[in-house]
Amino acid sequence: MNGLELAQKYYEECGEEVLKKSFPELFSRIAVGFAGEGSECFGFDDEISRDHDWGAAFCIWLNETDYRAFGKDVQAVYDSLPEEIDGYSRRIASSTAQERDGVLCIQNWYRKYTGCPEGPQTLAEWRRVPEAFLATAVNGKIFHDPSGKFSAIREHLQAYYPEDVRIKKIAARAAAMAQAGQYNFARCVQRGEYLAAELAKVEFIKAALSMVHLLNRKYAPFYKWMARSAKQLEKLPRAVSMLEQLSLLQPSGDEGAAAVNLIERICALVAGELKRQGLLTRQDYTQITHEGDLRLTPGDAAAATGGVQNAASGADPYGTGEPEFSSFLLDLCPILMRQIQDPYLRNSNYMQE
Image 1 (cartoon, rainbow, N blue to C red):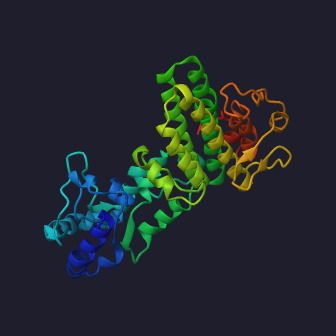
Image 2 (cartoon, rainbow, N blue to C red):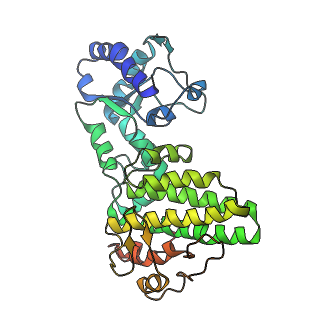
Image 3 (cartoon, rainbow, N blue to C red):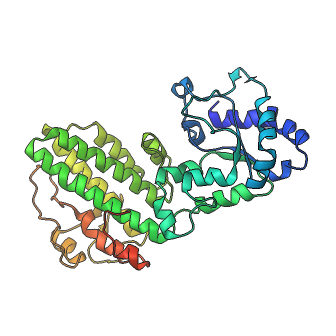
């Protein structure tokens, strides 16, 4: 049984009737579920996770007025619930994991993760929230919310970024993937700077995993769970598999050459998905293969960017059997940026989220 299943069982068998009888009028205004920080809220917990901050628990969310009036009384009832269920002990929070269960204020809870009591509303507010915080705010499961107040804010966040913000983030990830993977990793390998190459590879993988989430319209969680989350997404499963292969390759020798080639293939898959989503509108410079790869020719890549001098040279210095497109994802950034409606975002730096 994972943490989410345990939370629901604990609520339904130990908490629901007690709360209903103790607070008959308030019960229709509370929301109950399990969400927030911790691998169990994402459904990613396992045996290893149980060494800290794991056990039977759930969250009770009250609106601000009810929290002030009844919060302490509801918390006292929550604290009186059984210490064990089906052999599982009640959750004991460490000093760094307080206020993750029990009675919580709706407005304060969303303010904690998004900076706004009702969630972000403006483009500026959306851009300020770290993506992992948004993932945390919409994870888990809601067991009871008859008033719908907690769920309404949750659904607003689950609807995902405004499209201008999503495209801006996609452009930033494309630039980061091109800079770290297509450009810097290959150059570090050529120079024999293997520690720098490893750092570039990690930056590329992080940017690519974030890109996969953006193209699936799902928030990327904290880095420790990004790969596991990406494996559950519908779009770009081949790219995720290739990223795992890339993580195992050393930057030296034949593996370094293989890594350079693999990075190009991952970038091609991403560009192919960009085209499928209508984010690359030019039809004369790309061709998507049956497998979903994007093929570029040096001349077409340069033409696509209006003459940007960073396209393919056609060289093959690594002996991979494929031409080097030094950073073609960067060359696609102007096309992405032109689709942003907000003038401030449209004219900002590629690398800015």
